Image (cartoon, rainbow, N blue to C red):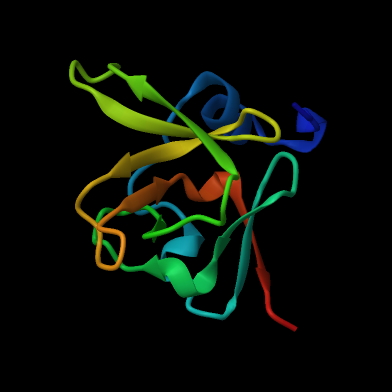
Length: 123
């Protein structure tokens, strides 16, 4: 695993490496509509294509599909029930949780902490 985290903010470190969560509706990326790609804020690996982003109403940037083979998952019981948590396969950074209430074609919702993403618009 690659770790770069010396340039991260305290909030990014808390979320990525201590499995924290940013405040609901706090991410500027919630309203990002441009075409482009979302990268891991820690290691700069491509994670999501903007075409897979949608407005879930959850308060966090949401995607119905990630790029192939970029995440590893584990079960999280922090709230007293099982949730599927996902981490960047390259650096191990925690990004959020996957829920089964997303749109077709996958039915998935990757609920991502916005501070863990860097958006790069298409040139």
